[in-house]
Length: 220
Length: 220
DNA sequence: TAGATTGTTAATCGATTAACAATC
DNA sequence: TAGATTGTTAATCGATTAACAATC
Image (tube, protein in one colour):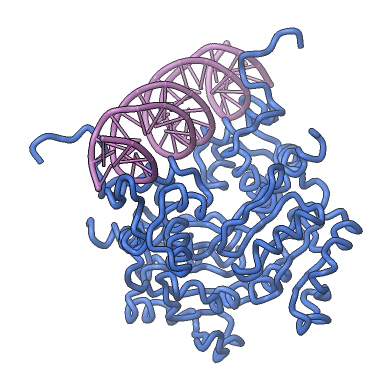
């Protein structure tokens, strides 16, 4: 390591667009493994992931050289390497705040568990919800957030409250030591530097579809 | 229109990245209007939408010139123009297929109604679910999809089934005449040209957060 | 060796941003 | 007119894609 390489060295500085696709590749590899496939080409994996093979190879090149020229990729090996890169070779403890309809659905979603996440607590500010049990987890008072985060080492929080409560919840999460937030409330959260927020907005997705649908109907 | 303008003429060919942000601006404008604000600058609107003002102005420039130099934007006017551009000045009928935990939550979500969408039917293949009523809408057999799409002129469908059923549901939707699909199932859908699919994947969002979280913990 | 397929290069494309002329 | 703010320009940045040399 005397000279700085001009080509992109694997390991660090993976583009955001690539990071967002790694979980898609991981899922495709899990499906291939479950189907009994031991080896696959970039073409096959790309098809399963819904991208083109050039993009897939370019993405994987940021992680390292895990394929074999003339042969393809070992499914299990690549699967492990991507899981390690994402950080889901072990489970991440997660809390969900706001146990309304959506919070219920999220708490019951079995896909989290199998993909590297464990819901360690459900929190709701409404005293009427206290004692309720969803997916074998008791709903606890929102005031217990800090203790729960400390005891379980929680780094990731899910906001599933109404819009008006979302900023307060996010503030409390940050205060408690959470540094990654998945926000389902239809509001823009402001958080300090170093805290990541991702947003899932159902209406916005539908509106994007509506825009294109409108063009189809009129344009021809 | 004798010469082709070299500058981007408003009205057509809006970049995808801009389209994805228009609903965010619309939501911010609705909030400003409800707060009694009549006029706002690009700086203020950008703050409310969580983007920088240069990006906002660039985005709006693709729609037309709806602001006034030295003054800003009329909130109600811009709100209407964006709603018209997206196509949500009238309601879009929507069907939801798969009334499990997530389907329940989606059916009960009041935000759709106020943002240009009307859930006209809930469908589920499980006969045990028939007759169930969610958010004042009766669950109907999946086999009725085509009739419902025809009767209501449905163009947008929501897939909230388990992964194994998703492709079959999408095929049936396309067959019935639906040309925009919002997919909550963790699977890659293949659809013919002319059909739009958008995907919401809860595990993928969490995995993207986990990736960054992992770097924070180790890197420093 | 011949065939196959990766990993990389380089060209292209699209998105972001800062700066500022236009103009209310 | 002076001050403010838009709409546009141009530079920069990042992502995508096709082509192919490297190599199993």
